[in-house]
Length: 338
Length: 299
Image (cartoon, rainbow over all chains, first blue to last red; front, top):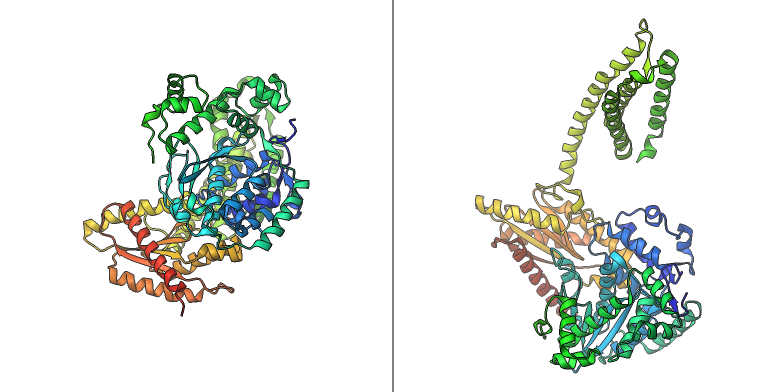
Protein backbone atom coordinates (compact mmCIF):
# COMPACT_ATOMS: atom_id res chain seq x y z
CA UNK A 1 0.00 0.00 0.00
CA UNK A 2 0.91 3.60 -0.46
CA UNK A 3 3.16 5.16 2.20
CA UNK A 4 1.40 8.01 3.99
CA UNK A 5 -2.03 6.77 3.01
CA UNK A 6 -4.43 4.46 4.82
CA UNK A 7 -6.99 2.14 3.35
CA UNK A 8 -10.27 0.88 4.74
CA UNK A 9 -8.65 -2.07 6.51
CA UNK A 10 -5.79 -0.20 8.23
CA UNK A 11 -6.36 0.05 11.94
CA UNK A 12 -5.88 3.79 12.21
CA UNK A 13 -8.80 4.75 14.49
CA UNK A 14 -8.40 4.72 18.25
CA UNK A 15 -11.59 3.30 19.74
CA UNK A 16 -11.52 5.94 22.45
CA UNK A 17 -11.54 8.76 19.93
CA UNK A 18 -15.18 8.46 18.99
CA UNK A 19 -16.00 4.80 18.44
CA UNK A 20 -16.80 4.14 22.10
CA UNK A 21 -18.77 7.40 22.22
CA UNK A 22 -20.94 6.21 19.35
CA UNK A 23 -21.42 2.80 20.95
CA UNK A 24 -22.45 4.31 24.28
CA UNK A 25 -24.91 6.72 22.68
CA UNK A 26 -26.41 3.89 20.64
CA UNK A 27 -26.66 1.63 23.68
CA UNK A 28 -28.49 4.29 25.67
CA UNK A 29 -30.92 4.43 22.76
CA UNK A 30 -31.73 0.76 23.04
CA UNK A 31 -29.11 -0.80 20.74
CA UNK A 32 -27.56 -4.10 21.77
CA UNK A 33 -23.76 -3.91 22.04
CA UNK A 34 -23.37 -7.49 20.93
CA UNK A 35 -25.40 -6.87 17.79
CA UNK A 36 -23.59 -3.60 17.05
CA UNK A 37 -20.22 -5.32 17.17
CA UNK A 38 -21.32 -8.52 15.44
CA UNK A 39 -19.15 -9.28 12.42
CA UNK A 40 -16.66 -6.48 13.12
CA UNK A 41 -13.13 -7.01 14.35
CA UNK A 42 -13.89 -5.10 17.56
CA UNK A 43 -14.36 -7.20 20.66
CA UNK A 44 -16.12 -6.14 23.84
CA UNK A 45 -12.95 -6.42 25.91
CA UNK A 46 -11.13 -4.04 23.51
CA UNK A 47 -13.47 -1.23 24.48
CA UNK A 48 -11.93 -0.76 27.90
CA UNK A 49 -8.32 -0.73 26.65
CA UNK A 50 -6.70 2.63 25.97
CA UNK A 51 -4.81 1.63 22.85
CA UNK A 52 -7.38 -0.49 21.01
CA UNK A 53 -7.96 0.46 17.42
CA UNK A 54 -10.27 -0.38 14.60
CA UNK A 55 -10.24 0.13 10.86
CA UNK A 56 -12.41 2.41 8.80
CA UNK A 57 -14.61 -0.33 7.43
CA UNK A 58 -15.72 -1.32 10.94
CA UNK A 59 -16.35 2.33 11.82
CA UNK A 60 -18.62 2.65 8.78
CA UNK A 61 -20.43 -0.55 9.80
CA UNK A 62 -21.06 0.84 13.27
CA UNK A 63 -22.31 4.13 11.84
CA UNK A 64 -24.67 2.24 9.53
CA UNK A 65 -26.01 0.12 12.38
CA UNK A 66 -26.57 3.02 14.73
CA UNK A 67 -28.48 4.86 12.02
CA UNK A 68 -31.07 2.11 12.15
CA UNK A 69 -32.04 3.40 15.60
CA UNK A 70 -34.28 6.10 14.09
CA UNK A 71 -32.66 8.72 16.28
CA UNK A 72 -32.07 11.73 14.00
CA UNK A 73 -30.25 13.58 16.77
CA UNK A 74 -27.38 11.07 16.68
CA UNK A 75 -24.84 12.98 14.50
CA UNK A 76 -25.39 16.14 16.54
CA UNK A 77 -24.94 14.58 19.95
CA UNK A 78 -22.10 12.40 18.77
CA UNK A 79 -20.36 15.64 17.75
CA UNK A 80 -20.96 17.03 21.27
CA UNK A 81 -19.73 13.82 22.75
CA UNK A 82 -16.55 13.99 20.65
CA UNK A 83 -15.88 17.59 21.58
CA UNK A 84 -16.19 16.71 25.26
CA UNK A 85 -14.21 13.48 24.90
CA UNK A 86 -11.87 13.21 27.87
CA UNK A 87 -9.60 10.68 26.15
CA UNK A 88 -8.71 12.79 23.15
CA UNK A 89 -6.08 15.43 23.81
CA UNK A 90 -6.95 16.99 20.48
CA UNK A 91 -10.63 17.51 21.36
CA UNK A 92 -9.71 18.73 24.82
CA UNK A 93 -7.24 21.23 23.40
CA UNK A 94 -9.51 22.80 20.76
CA UNK A 95 -11.65 25.04 23.05
CA UNK A 96 -8.54 26.10 24.96
CA UNK A 97 -6.91 27.70 21.91
CA UNK A 98 -6.43 31.47 21.80
CA UNK A 99 -8.92 31.93 18.96
CA UNK A 100 -10.75 30.16 16.16
CA UNK A 101 -7.78 30.47 13.80
CA UNK A 102 -5.45 28.63 16.19
CA UNK A 103 -8.10 26.10 17.10
CA UNK A 104 -8.96 25.17 13.51
CA UNK A 105 -5.27 25.08 12.56
CA UNK A 106 -4.75 22.60 15.39
CA UNK A 107 -7.73 20.52 14.23
CA UNK A 108 -6.48 20.57 10.64
CA UNK A 109 -2.98 19.51 11.62
CA UNK A 110 -4.09 16.62 13.87
CA UNK A 111 -7.27 15.65 11.98
CA UNK A 112 -6.04 12.08 11.46
CA UNK A 113 -6.48 11.59 15.23
CA UNK A 114 -10.18 12.34 15.03
CA UNK A 115 -11.90 11.90 11.66
CA UNK A 116 -9.41 10.70 9.04
CA UNK A 117 -12.32 9.94 6.70
CA UNK A 118 -12.91 13.65 6.03
CA UNK A 119 -10.67 16.29 4.51
CA UNK A 120 -11.24 19.95 3.79
CA UNK A 121 -10.58 22.49 1.08
CA UNK A 122 -10.14 26.05 2.32
CA UNK A 123 -10.85 29.20 0.38
CA UNK A 124 -10.73 32.73 1.71
CA UNK A 125 -12.44 35.86 0.43
CA UNK A 126 -12.59 39.39 1.82
CA UNK A 127 -15.42 38.57 4.19
CA UNK A 128 -15.50 34.81 4.69
CA UNK A 129 -13.44 31.71 5.04
CA UNK A 130 -15.12 28.74 3.39
CA UNK A 131 -14.43 25.20 4.52
CA UNK A 132 -15.54 22.56 2.03
CA UNK A 133 -15.84 19.10 3.60
CA UNK A 134 -15.05 16.12 1.40
CA UNK A 135 -14.67 12.38 1.93
CA UNK A 136 -11.01 11.28 2.13
CA UNK A 137 -11.92 7.65 1.53
CA UNK A 138 -15.04 6.10 0.08
CA UNK A 139 -17.72 6.58 2.77
CA UNK A 140 -20.61 5.10 0.79
CA UNK A 141 -24.08 5.48 2.28
CA UNK A 142 -22.57 6.80 5.52
CA UNK A 143 -21.21 9.96 3.89
CA UNK A 144 -24.18 12.18 4.81
CA UNK A 145 -23.99 11.11 8.47
CA UNK A 146 -20.25 11.66 8.73
CA UNK A 147 -20.39 15.04 6.98
CA UNK A 148 -23.19 16.10 9.37
CA UNK A 149 -21.08 14.87 12.27
CA UNK A 150 -18.04 16.90 11.18
CA UNK A 151 -20.18 19.96 10.50
CA UNK A 152 -21.89 19.71 13.89
CA UNK A 153 -18.48 19.38 15.53
CA UNK A 154 -17.25 22.61 13.89
CA UNK A 155 -20.45 24.51 14.72
CA UNK A 156 -20.29 23.43 18.35
CA UNK A 157 -16.63 24.42 18.59
CA UNK A 158 -17.35 27.90 17.21
CA UNK A 159 -20.32 28.26 19.56
CA UNK A 160 -18.27 27.16 22.55
CA UNK A 161 -15.37 29.48 21.85
CA UNK A 162 -17.11 32.57 20.53
CA UNK A 163 -20.85 32.21 21.34
CA UNK A 164 -21.40 33.59 17.84
CA UNK A 165 -22.18 30.46 15.85
CA UNK A 166 -25.37 32.14 14.64
CA UNK A 167 -23.21 34.08 12.16
CA UNK A 168 -22.09 30.90 10.41
CA UNK A 169 -23.59 29.71 7.17
CA UNK A 170 -23.97 26.07 6.24
CA UNK A 171 -24.50 24.34 2.92
CA UNK A 172 -25.30 20.64 2.77
CA UNK A 173 -25.58 18.32 -0.21
CA UNK A 174 -28.22 16.17 1.45
CA UNK A 175 -31.87 16.85 0.73
CA UNK A 176 -33.88 18.71 3.34
CA UNK A 177 -35.42 16.43 5.99
CA UNK A 178 -39.21 16.51 6.44
CA UNK A 179 -38.87 18.61 9.58
CA UNK A 180 -36.01 20.94 10.41
CA UNK A 181 -36.47 20.86 14.18
CA UNK A 182 -33.35 18.80 14.83
CA UNK A 183 -31.17 21.15 12.82
CA UNK A 184 -32.78 24.22 14.41
CA UNK A 185 -32.37 22.99 17.94
CA UNK A 186 -28.72 22.00 17.55
CA UNK A 187 -27.47 24.68 15.17
CA UNK A 188 -28.01 28.36 15.89
CA UNK A 189 -27.20 29.18 12.25
CA UNK A 190 -29.18 28.56 9.06
CA UNK A 191 -28.49 25.46 6.98
CA UNK A 192 -29.37 25.12 3.31
CA UNK A 193 -30.03 21.73 1.76
CA UNK A 194 -29.65 20.14 -1.69
CA UNK A 195 -26.64 22.38 -2.29
CA UNK A 196 -23.82 21.58 -4.72
CA UNK A 197 -21.30 21.29 -1.87
CA UNK A 198 -20.94 20.54 1.82
CA UNK A 199 -19.48 23.76 3.13
CA UNK A 200 -19.22 25.90 6.24
CA UNK A 201 -18.75 29.65 5.72
CA UNK A 202 -17.17 31.49 8.64
CA UNK A 203 -17.12 35.31 8.75
CA UNK A 204 -13.55 36.58 9.08
CA UNK A 205 -14.60 38.72 12.05
CA UNK A 206 -14.85 35.51 14.11
CA UNK A 207 -11.43 34.39 13.07
CA UNK A 208 -9.25 36.21 15.58
CA UNK A 209 -11.85 36.95 18.24
CA UNK A 210 -10.32 35.60 21.48
CA UNK A 211 -11.95 32.35 22.65
CA UNK A 212 -14.00 32.65 25.84
CA UNK A 213 -12.62 29.27 26.89
CA UNK A 214 -8.96 30.01 26.04
CA UNK A 215 -6.26 28.77 28.37
CA UNK A 216 -2.70 29.08 27.10
CA UNK A 217 -0.96 26.62 29.45
CA UNK A 218 -3.60 23.94 29.02
CA UNK A 219 -3.49 24.30 25.25
CA UNK A 220 0.30 23.95 25.25
CA UNK A 221 0.25 20.80 27.39
CA UNK A 222 -2.49 19.15 25.36
CA UNK A 223 -0.77 20.05 22.08
CA UNK A 224 2.32 18.29 23.38
CA UNK A 225 0.21 15.21 24.08
CA UNK A 226 -1.12 15.39 20.50
CA UNK A 227 2.44 15.46 19.14
CA UNK A 228 3.31 12.48 21.31
CA UNK A 229 0.33 10.57 19.99
CA UNK A 230 1.61 11.24 16.47
CA UNK A 231 4.46 8.81 17.08
CA UNK A 232 1.95 5.99 17.64
CA UNK A 233 -0.69 7.25 15.24
CA UNK A 234 1.26 8.77 12.36
CA UNK A 235 -0.52 11.23 10.07
CA UNK A 236 -1.96 9.15 7.25
CA UNK A 237 -4.36 10.47 4.65
CA UNK A 238 -7.05 8.84 2.59
CA UNK A 239 -6.31 8.15 -1.06
CA UNK A 240 -9.07 10.43 -2.35
CA UNK A 241 -7.66 13.24 -0.21
CA UNK A 242 -4.09 12.76 -1.51
CA UNK A 243 -5.26 12.87 -5.11
CA UNK A 244 -7.72 15.74 -4.84
CA UNK A 245 -5.37 17.93 -2.84
CA UNK A 246 -2.62 17.39 -5.39
CA UNK A 247 -5.06 18.22 -8.19
CA UNK A 248 -6.03 21.36 -6.27
CA UNK A 249 -2.40 22.42 -5.86
CA UNK A 250 -1.65 21.88 -9.53
CA UNK A 251 -4.44 24.25 -10.68
CA UNK A 252 -4.74 26.02 -13.05
CA UNK A 253 -2.85 23.14 -14.64
CA UNK A 254 -5.00 20.02 -15.03
CA UNK A 255 -2.79 17.25 -13.69
CA UNK A 256 -3.02 13.91 -15.49
CA UNK A 257 -3.36 10.43 -14.06
CA UNK A 258 0.27 9.72 -14.96
CA UNK A 259 1.52 12.84 -13.16
CA UNK A 260 -0.50 11.94 -10.06
CA UNK A 261 0.74 8.35 -10.12
CA UNK A 262 4.35 9.43 -10.33
CA UNK A 263 3.77 11.98 -7.53
CA UNK A 264 2.44 9.16 -5.36
CA UNK A 265 5.27 6.85 -6.44
CA UNK A 266 2.95 4.38 -8.16
CA UNK A 267 2.46 3.11 -11.67
CA UNK A 268 -0.65 4.36 -13.45
CA UNK A 269 -2.17 0.91 -13.42
CA UNK A 270 -1.75 0.43 -9.67
CA UNK A 271 -3.29 3.86 -9.04
CA UNK A 272 -6.20 2.86 -11.23
CA UNK A 273 -6.57 -0.36 -9.31
CA UNK A 274 -6.48 1.43 -5.93
CA UNK A 275 -9.16 3.84 -7.11
CA UNK A 276 -11.25 0.98 -8.37
CA UNK A 277 -11.14 -0.53 -4.89
CA UNK A 278 -12.80 2.65 -3.65
CA UNK A 279 -15.48 2.49 -6.38
CA UNK A 280 -14.25 5.54 -8.25
CA UNK A 281 -11.91 6.57 -11.06
CA UNK A 282 -9.53 9.41 -11.78
CA UNK A 283 -11.75 11.46 -14.10
CA UNK A 284 -14.61 11.37 -11.58
CA UNK A 285 -12.33 12.70 -8.82
CA UNK A 286 -11.00 15.49 -11.04
CA UNK A 287 -14.53 16.46 -12.11
CA UNK A 288 -15.78 16.37 -8.53
CA UNK A 289 -13.02 18.70 -7.37
CA UNK A 290 -13.50 21.18 -10.23
CA UNK A 291 -17.26 21.14 -9.73
CA UNK A 292 -16.88 21.99 -6.03
CA UNK A 293 -14.40 24.75 -6.75
CA UNK A 294 -16.51 26.24 -9.53
CA UNK A 295 -19.53 26.35 -7.22
CA UNK A 296 -17.50 27.85 -4.43
CA UNK A 297 -15.99 30.52 -6.68
CA UNK A 298 -19.40 31.36 -8.08
CA UNK A 299 -20.78 31.80 -4.57
CA UNK A 300 -17.92 33.94 -3.42
CA UNK A 301 -17.21 36.26 -6.28
CA UNK A 302 -18.45 37.77 -9.50
CA UNK A 303 -15.94 36.03 -11.73
CA UNK A 304 -16.82 35.75 -15.38
CA UNK A 305 -16.98 32.39 -17.09
CA UNK A 306 -13.70 33.20 -18.79
CA UNK A 307 -11.95 33.88 -15.49
CA UNK A 308 -13.45 30.73 -13.95
CA UNK A 309 -12.35 28.67 -16.93
CA UNK A 310 -8.76 29.86 -16.59
CA UNK A 311 -8.77 29.32 -12.80
CA UNK A 312 -9.93 25.74 -13.24
CA UNK A 313 -7.62 24.94 -16.13
CA UNK A 314 -10.07 24.93 -19.03
CA UNK A 315 -8.85 26.12 -22.41
CA UNK A 316 -11.85 28.41 -22.96
CA UNK A 317 -15.12 29.43 -21.36
CA UNK A 318 -17.27 27.26 -23.66
CA UNK A 319 -15.58 24.11 -22.46
CA UNK A 320 -16.04 25.23 -18.89
CA UNK A 321 -19.68 26.12 -19.43
CA UNK A 322 -20.34 22.73 -21.00
CA UNK A 323 -18.56 20.89 -18.18
CA UNK A 324 -20.48 22.85 -15.54
CA UNK A 325 -23.75 21.97 -17.17
CA UNK A 326 -22.72 18.33 -17.22
CA UNK A 327 -21.91 18.37 -13.47
CA UNK A 328 -24.86 20.29 -12.15
CA UNK A 329 -27.52 20.28 -14.86
CA UNK A 330 -27.65 24.06 -15.11
CA UNK A 331 -25.46 26.88 -16.40
CA UNK A 332 -22.97 28.81 -14.22
CA UNK A 333 -24.90 32.09 -14.41
CA UNK A 334 -27.91 30.50 -12.66
CA UNK A 335 -25.93 29.87 -9.46
CA UNK A 336 -26.93 32.42 -6.90
CA UNK A 337 -24.44 34.82 -5.35
CA UNK A 338 -24.99 35.48 -1.71
CA UNK B 1 -37.00 -12.57 26.61
CA UNK B 2 -36.68 -16.22 25.47
CA UNK B 3 -34.40 -16.97 28.41
CA UNK B 4 -37.44 -16.72 30.71
CA UNK B 5 -39.01 -19.58 28.78
CA UNK B 6 -36.22 -22.16 28.68
CA UNK B 7 -38.35 -24.99 30.03
CA UNK B 8 -41.09 -24.19 27.49
CA UNK B 9 -38.64 -24.48 24.61
CA UNK B 10 -37.34 -27.76 26.03
CA UNK B 11 -40.91 -29.06 26.43
CA UNK B 12 -41.75 -28.16 22.83
CA UNK B 13 -38.75 -29.97 21.46
CA UNK B 14 -39.38 -33.01 23.68
CA UNK B 15 -43.01 -33.24 22.63
CA UNK B 16 -42.23 -32.94 18.93
CA UNK B 17 -39.58 -35.61 19.28
CA UNK B 18 -41.99 -37.92 21.08
CA UNK B 19 -44.57 -37.41 18.32
CA UNK B 20 -41.98 -38.27 15.68
CA UNK B 21 -40.85 -41.43 17.49
CA UNK B 22 -44.43 -42.57 18.06
CA UNK B 23 -45.42 -41.95 14.46
CA UNK B 24 -42.49 -43.90 13.05
CA UNK B 25 -43.05 -46.71 15.55
CA UNK B 26 -46.66 -47.18 14.58
CA UNK B 27 -46.72 -46.34 10.92
CA UNK B 28 -44.87 -47.37 7.79
CA UNK B 29 -43.55 -45.10 5.09
CA UNK B 30 -45.88 -44.63 2.11
CA UNK B 31 -44.62 -45.49 -1.36
CA UNK B 32 -43.22 -42.48 -3.19
CA UNK B 33 -45.95 -42.50 -5.84
CA UNK B 34 -48.86 -42.15 -3.42
CA UNK B 35 -47.60 -38.99 -1.74
CA UNK B 36 -49.75 -35.93 -2.49
CA UNK B 37 -47.39 -32.99 -2.73
CA UNK B 38 -50.10 -30.33 -2.82
CA UNK B 39 -51.42 -31.53 0.57
CA UNK B 40 -47.89 -31.42 1.93
CA UNK B 41 -47.42 -27.85 0.74
CA UNK B 42 -50.65 -26.72 2.38
CA UNK B 43 -50.09 -28.53 5.67
CA UNK B 44 -46.42 -27.55 5.73
CA UNK B 45 -47.30 -23.86 5.47
CA UNK B 46 -49.89 -24.21 8.25
CA UNK B 47 -47.27 -25.85 10.46
CA UNK B 48 -44.71 -23.15 9.69
CA UNK B 49 -47.16 -20.38 10.60
CA UNK B 50 -48.04 -22.09 13.88
CA UNK B 51 -44.32 -22.45 14.64
CA UNK B 52 -43.91 -18.72 13.91
CA UNK B 53 -46.64 -17.91 16.43
CA UNK B 54 -44.95 -20.08 19.02
CA UNK B 55 -41.58 -18.37 18.41
CA UNK B 56 -43.11 -14.88 18.58
CA UNK B 57 -44.83 -15.71 21.87
CA UNK B 58 -41.69 -17.14 23.41
CA UNK B 59 -39.46 -14.27 22.24
CA UNK B 60 -41.75 -11.34 22.93
CA UNK B 61 -43.95 -12.10 25.93
CA UNK B 62 -42.78 -11.86 29.53
CA UNK B 63 -43.67 -14.78 31.81
CA UNK B 64 -47.20 -14.71 33.22
CA UNK B 65 -50.50 -16.55 33.02
CA UNK B 66 -51.59 -14.98 29.72
CA UNK B 67 -48.33 -16.09 28.14
CA UNK B 68 -48.94 -19.63 29.46
CA UNK B 69 -52.34 -19.83 27.77
CA UNK B 70 -51.03 -18.43 24.52
CA UNK B 71 -48.06 -20.76 24.62
CA UNK B 72 -49.91 -23.99 25.44
CA UNK B 73 -52.58 -23.14 22.89
CA UNK B 74 -50.13 -22.74 20.08
CA UNK B 75 -48.07 -25.72 21.28
CA UNK B 76 -51.12 -27.98 20.91
CA UNK B 77 -51.70 -26.55 17.44
CA UNK B 78 -48.09 -27.19 16.48
CA UNK B 79 -48.31 -30.82 17.69
CA UNK B 80 -51.51 -31.41 15.83
CA UNK B 81 -50.21 -29.88 12.62
CA UNK B 82 -46.96 -31.83 12.86
CA UNK B 83 -48.78 -35.16 13.06
CA UNK B 84 -51.04 -33.99 10.26
CA UNK B 85 -48.02 -33.38 8.09
CA UNK B 86 -46.43 -36.71 9.10
CA UNK B 87 -49.42 -38.76 8.05
CA UNK B 88 -48.87 -37.60 4.50
CA UNK B 89 -45.66 -39.63 4.57
CA UNK B 90 -46.71 -42.49 6.84
CA UNK B 91 -49.53 -45.03 6.70
CA UNK B 92 -50.93 -46.31 10.02
CA UNK B 93 -52.59 -49.71 10.49
CA UNK B 94 -56.36 -49.41 10.05
CA UNK B 95 -57.26 -50.87 13.50
CA UNK B 96 -55.12 -48.31 15.38
CA UNK B 97 -57.02 -45.09 16.11
CA UNK B 98 -54.42 -43.52 18.43
CA UNK B 99 -52.79 -41.47 15.76
CA UNK B 100 -55.95 -40.02 14.32
CA UNK B 101 -57.09 -38.99 17.82
CA UNK B 102 -53.74 -37.47 18.51
CA UNK B 103 -54.03 -35.62 15.24
CA UNK B 104 -57.50 -34.18 15.60
CA UNK B 105 -58.01 -33.71 19.36
CA UNK B 106 -55.25 -31.19 20.21
CA UNK B 107 -56.24 -28.74 17.47
CA UNK B 108 -59.62 -27.61 18.87
CA UNK B 109 -58.28 -27.67 22.43
CA UNK B 110 -55.33 -25.54 21.29
CA UNK B 111 -57.67 -23.12 19.54
CA UNK B 112 -59.73 -22.76 22.72
CA UNK B 113 -56.65 -22.16 24.87
CA UNK B 114 -55.29 -19.64 22.36
CA UNK B 115 -58.59 -17.79 22.27
CA UNK B 116 -58.73 -17.66 26.06
CA UNK B 117 -55.18 -16.29 26.04
CA UNK B 118 -56.10 -13.65 23.45
CA UNK B 119 -59.04 -12.48 25.55
CA UNK B 120 -56.63 -12.11 28.46
CA UNK B 121 -54.25 -10.24 26.19
CA UNK B 122 -57.07 -7.89 25.20
CA UNK B 123 -57.78 -7.12 28.89
CA UNK B 124 -54.09 -6.62 29.57
CA UNK B 125 -53.83 -4.25 26.61
CA UNK B 126 -56.68 -2.14 28.01
CA UNK B 127 -54.73 -1.71 31.23
CA UNK B 128 -51.53 -0.88 29.31
CA UNK B 129 -53.45 1.67 27.25
CA UNK B 130 -54.43 3.35 30.50
CA UNK B 131 -50.79 3.36 31.54
CA UNK B 132 -49.84 4.94 28.22
CA UNK B 133 -52.29 7.82 28.52
CA UNK B 134 -50.40 11.07 28.45
CA UNK B 135 -47.91 9.50 26.09
CA UNK B 136 -50.09 8.88 23.08
CA UNK B 137 -53.30 10.01 21.42
CA UNK B 138 -55.28 8.32 18.65
CA UNK B 139 -52.27 6.92 16.78
CA UNK B 140 -49.93 4.10 17.76
CA UNK B 141 -46.78 3.44 15.78
CA UNK B 142 -43.72 2.16 17.61
CA UNK B 143 -41.45 3.27 14.75
CA UNK B 144 -42.14 6.90 15.67
CA UNK B 145 -40.88 6.51 19.25
CA UNK B 146 -37.75 8.35 20.32
CA UNK B 147 -35.45 5.50 21.36
CA UNK B 148 -33.93 7.43 24.27
CA UNK B 149 -36.93 8.78 26.20
CA UNK B 150 -39.51 6.32 24.85
CA UNK B 151 -41.75 9.28 24.10
CA UNK B 152 -43.14 9.84 20.64
CA UNK B 153 -40.97 12.02 18.43
CA UNK B 154 -41.36 14.73 15.84
CA UNK B 155 -43.20 12.78 13.13
CA UNK B 156 -45.84 11.60 15.59
CA UNK B 157 -46.30 15.13 16.90
CA UNK B 158 -46.96 16.45 13.40
CA UNK B 159 -49.48 13.70 12.65
CA UNK B 160 -51.36 14.16 15.93
CA UNK B 161 -51.25 17.95 15.92
CA UNK B 162 -52.68 18.08 12.40
CA UNK B 163 -55.62 15.90 13.36
CA UNK B 164 -56.27 17.63 16.67
CA UNK B 165 -56.30 21.05 15.02
CA UNK B 166 -59.01 19.85 12.63
CA UNK B 167 -61.04 18.15 15.35
CA UNK B 168 -60.90 21.12 17.69
CA UNK B 169 -61.85 23.48 14.92
CA UNK B 170 -64.88 21.36 14.03
CA UNK B 171 -66.03 21.13 17.63
CA UNK B 172 -65.00 24.73 18.36
CA UNK B 173 -62.91 23.70 21.35
CA UNK B 174 -59.71 25.45 22.39
CA UNK B 175 -56.45 23.56 21.85
CA UNK B 176 -53.23 24.65 23.56
CA UNK B 177 -49.63 23.71 23.19
CA UNK B 178 -46.64 24.00 25.52
CA UNK B 179 -43.06 23.93 24.36
CA UNK B 180 -40.40 23.20 26.98
CA UNK B 181 -36.66 23.61 26.65
CA UNK B 182 -33.90 22.96 29.17
CA UNK B 183 -31.75 26.02 29.84
CA UNK B 184 -28.02 25.69 29.34
CA UNK B 185 -28.29 22.01 28.51
CA UNK B 186 -25.14 21.93 26.40
CA UNK B 187 -23.17 23.41 29.29
CA UNK B 188 -24.60 20.67 31.52
CA UNK B 189 -23.56 18.04 28.98
CA UNK B 190 -20.10 19.53 28.78
CA UNK B 191 -19.67 19.58 32.53
CA UNK B 192 -21.18 16.24 33.46
CA UNK B 193 -20.84 14.22 30.27
CA UNK B 194 -23.31 13.04 27.66
CA UNK B 195 -24.37 10.05 29.77
CA UNK B 196 -25.60 12.36 32.53
CA UNK B 197 -27.36 14.50 29.95
CA UNK B 198 -29.15 11.51 28.44
CA UNK B 199 -30.07 10.29 31.91
CA UNK B 200 -31.53 13.69 32.75
CA UNK B 201 -33.66 13.70 29.57
CA UNK B 202 -35.07 10.28 30.44
CA UNK B 203 -35.89 11.34 34.01
CA UNK B 204 -37.44 14.58 32.84
CA UNK B 205 -39.61 12.73 30.31
CA UNK B 206 -40.88 10.43 33.06
CA UNK B 207 -41.54 13.27 35.46
CA UNK B 208 -43.39 15.35 32.88
CA UNK B 209 -45.56 12.51 31.64
CA UNK B 210 -46.53 11.64 35.22
CA UNK B 211 -47.75 15.22 35.76
CA UNK B 212 -50.05 15.42 32.75
CA UNK B 213 -53.75 14.72 32.46
CA UNK B 214 -54.72 11.52 30.69
CA UNK B 215 -56.01 13.45 27.66
CA UNK B 216 -52.75 15.34 27.08
CA UNK B 217 -49.81 14.06 25.11
CA UNK B 218 -46.10 14.68 25.63
CA UNK B 219 -43.66 14.36 22.72
CA UNK B 220 -39.90 14.77 22.42
CA UNK B 221 -39.51 17.61 19.95
CA UNK B 222 -35.77 17.78 19.27
CA UNK B 223 -32.62 17.98 21.38
CA UNK B 224 -33.58 19.39 24.78
CA UNK B 225 -37.09 20.41 23.71
CA UNK B 226 -40.40 18.77 24.50
CA UNK B 227 -43.92 19.61 23.37
CA UNK B 228 -47.12 19.04 25.35
CA UNK B 229 -50.42 19.06 23.50
CA UNK B 230 -53.28 20.11 25.80
CA UNK B 231 -56.68 19.19 24.41
CA UNK B 232 -59.77 21.26 25.29
CA UNK B 233 -57.61 23.76 27.11
CA UNK B 234 -57.54 27.54 27.03
CA UNK B 235 -54.43 29.67 27.16
CA UNK B 236 -55.03 30.52 30.84
CA UNK B 237 -55.25 26.88 31.89
CA UNK B 238 -52.20 26.15 29.78
CA UNK B 239 -50.27 28.86 31.65
CA UNK B 240 -51.27 27.29 34.96
CA UNK B 241 -50.15 23.92 33.66
CA UNK B 242 -46.79 25.46 32.67
CA UNK B 243 -46.34 26.92 36.16
CA UNK B 244 -47.24 23.58 37.70
CA UNK B 245 -44.63 21.78 35.59
CA UNK B 246 -42.00 24.38 36.55
CA UNK B 247 -42.71 23.74 40.23
CA UNK B 248 -42.60 19.97 39.83
CA UNK B 249 -39.14 20.24 38.33
CA UNK B 250 -37.67 20.75 41.79
CA UNK B 251 -38.54 17.08 42.42
CA UNK B 252 -35.94 16.13 39.88
CA UNK B 253 -32.71 16.29 41.81
CA UNK B 254 -29.88 15.96 39.34
CA UNK B 255 -27.46 15.77 42.31
CA UNK B 256 -24.76 18.11 40.97
CA UNK B 257 -26.70 20.90 39.42
CA UNK B 258 -30.24 22.14 39.29
CA UNK B 259 -31.33 22.74 35.71
CA UNK B 260 -34.17 25.08 34.88
CA UNK B 261 -36.83 24.85 32.19
CA UNK B 262 -38.08 27.52 29.84
CA UNK B 263 -41.73 27.00 28.95
CA UNK B 264 -43.90 28.81 26.45
CA UNK B 265 -47.60 28.31 26.00
CA UNK B 266 -49.92 29.23 23.17
CA UNK B 267 -53.49 28.61 22.21
CA UNK B 268 -53.43 27.08 18.75
CA UNK B 269 -55.21 29.41 16.34
CA UNK B 270 -53.45 28.59 13.14
CA UNK B 271 -54.41 25.75 10.85
CA UNK B 272 -50.90 24.66 9.90
CA UNK B 273 -49.03 22.37 12.30
CA UNK B 274 -45.67 23.59 10.96
CA UNK B 275 -46.55 27.26 11.55
CA UNK B 276 -47.75 26.55 15.08
CA UNK B 277 -44.55 24.75 15.97
CA UNK B 278 -42.34 27.35 14.28
CA UNK B 279 -44.06 30.04 16.35
CA UNK B 280 -43.55 28.01 19.52
CA UNK B 281 -39.87 27.63 18.65
CA UNK B 282 -39.45 31.38 18.20
CA UNK B 283 -41.23 32.11 21.48
CA UNK B 284 -39.06 29.61 23.30
CA UNK B 285 -35.89 31.15 21.85
CA UNK B 286 -37.02 34.59 23.04
CA UNK B 287 -37.78 33.29 26.54
CA UNK B 288 -34.40 31.55 26.69
CA UNK B 289 -32.57 34.70 25.62
CA UNK B 290 -34.39 36.69 28.27
CA UNK B 291 -33.59 34.24 31.06
CA UNK B 292 -29.97 34.07 29.91
CA UNK B 293 -29.69 37.86 29.99
CA UNK B 294 -31.28 37.82 33.44
CA UNK B 295 -28.75 35.29 34.69
CA UNK B 296 -25.83 37.29 33.33
CA UNK B 297 -26.89 40.45 35.15
CA UNK B 298 -24.83 41.14 38.28
CA UNK B 299 -26.83 40.99 41.53
